[in-house]
Length: 157
Image 1 (cartoon, rainbow, N blue to C red):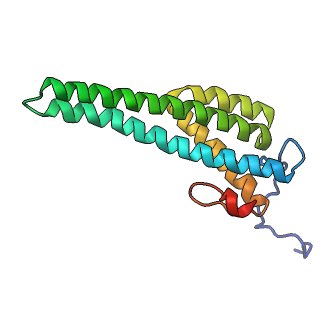
Image 2 (cartoon, helix red, strand yellow; image 1 turned 180 degrees about the vertical axis):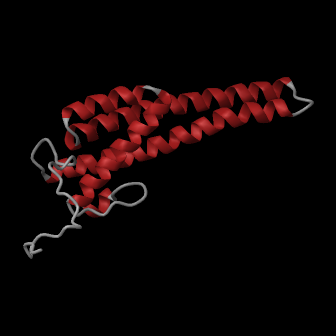
């Protein structure tokens, strides 16, 4: 049984298309916009998670006490209102940052699907994670170091 020396039977199949390829030509300005939007997206997603934790913990802590006063209830309502406003503002900014990333990194069909999913609360985190992962891969493929909260825009560009 003879086979060609350049064929490896254990080699993984080649990919047909690279899903991370940009729709437009890559320029330094596009890379900077993707890096800034990706970092903003990550920070806003972190703020959303913190606001959701605050929204669930504060009422539980308030109603666990036996002798709660009216002042405590007012304090709880104010904290809840602040957490809701932080969540809404972070959601709007994260959605706009996701649009900025998706238009440069993904295909148009994937971009529309991602933005539609971002509106749904639980699916939104999954969609934002997907956009963040695509942006990280896009930046790393172009030689930019990406940390936990994204690329350091001041040092890289």
